[in-house]
Image (cartoon, rainbow over all chains, first blue to last red; front, top):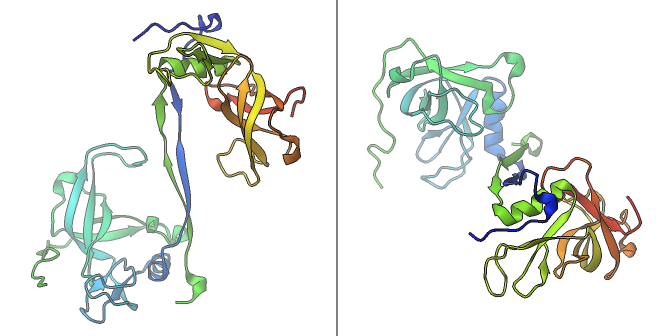
Length: 175
Length: 151
């Protein structure tokens, strides 16, 4: 690289080597009618799924339509806040905005009464002891802190019940 | 479900980027932090502000950085009637190309006339209004104002 000559006023000062260029995108997020109903249920410690009138599957959290049958669904089903681990991932990598001590476990939990699992955080269990088929229960925030968002569920923890057999999603599906 | 029960929430997505400057742009930002403006001499002897690492015509590496004035002439401008978040000013202002004294190319910055569009014109003389606390960033110049005025 060629030698750069600077005005003498810059001779004895520390040179800038990097600048901050943060980007920020501001949205107003609208989850839609059925997700709004789900979140309002959460604020009352209820987990509400929707049943498809064609395939009878119960989705949670539901978007208001059945991805298999392409029909609008609005038949609410109140589900248990207990469920079963169908898949999980031990997170060993730190990243910006994580807000968790590593390692921790992110899981998919099939709530009792539901047909599709949803994402959850697993705590009060060593990451080495997490397994598919493990029974879990929700740990909610204090009633005064309940709000229409998923932070109302602090995490899921093991339930003192025997493991159950998990039928993996998609098994037995015919197209 | 009734309309009134539809939820909305503010959602802000932020990326904490920083970027390295290289020696030429780094010197430009260093000078801003120190309260003055530098450009670089092009292959044809013209003074380019802000400075380029490579000549825009011949592509050769440029090396001779020079100080220019912190006042100059508006050569083009656009009025911003409704400033957005992230704009340099929160009242109506002009984005202007300003050819600084001693420079041969214009630099983009904001011109503040107190919200008065009729006070901006091509050819007007403007001067940099420096921030008291500077960190080596283009915003170390708060804006330009009509020469002789101080906002």
